[in-house]
Image: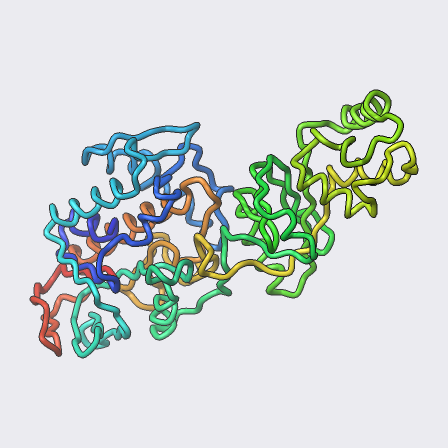
Length: 425
């Protein structure tokens, strides 16, 4: 939608083809329906993938301030939560409505229920022929912005990658990102449902890759929550490449090392009493289910008497709260992922997001090998890449750099507009 609006705003006639029965289906699910559409704390380190090499050029041309202007100038009030930007209404439908109204303002024709299954470049004219069902349509330029593979129920089933491959492009390995991780162990069901502040450290083949603090969620199969999402991409790629992936959980991240040692000394000195059980002694340290998890992992029982514990068992209990180590067996699939990682590599694109292999073909969003962490970064990438691709396609068309010939449609055609036609899928 952003690509189509920017192309039309720049003077091109743009059509938008949508395979669903309505546009913006996936957008409505973002931010738990509240739509964290951007973040003021924008930086290169928030993104992964080869296209990060374009970061400075792209975001300097259409970044957070331009996104804020786009939505605020069209009537949307904005809420700022420590840099995380939401519509004041806290409704994703507000963001979608702004985009829909913009499509109408620029007379962009939207064709819903139309899945493009083939795109071919006409070598004689330089234009493109697209197939949707039994119909064929012709355009000067094509912008592929049909998402990756995350949430396939909303239409992102990887068709964009297939179309790109048919046109000669390569696609890097695709994995789920911003997704839950599945872990080994038979204790997860007993801990399911717990939410707690924690610091998680990702290790690949024993080497520390990343540490993230936030609200951890324990599930019946492993771990979830924003800190897990932030490194799930790296974990998924490591598992794909047959590497050993582990996560160390610190259930008490508020302590420094010395303070933590004193805490246990004082607790054993002041609270332990004759006949007191381990379950009683640990009450108040953490969630009851976490306490039970630690007790079992330490090789103890809730009914064990504290005064009878060996020094080794006491040290192990204390250590487990700070370094509870789990082995990751895999991630959840694309159905649960918020985004997919991987895509069209940067070396096959210009910094205007035009294909180096197929002039007149542009890419935007998740199809490109670039994805961000949680916090509005992936939606900002959608706005930035969509705007850049839309403006570039329109500029090239207006300058006569694209096909300038009459490209008649083969089927019951859409109207033929000649020079300046831009298609957004």
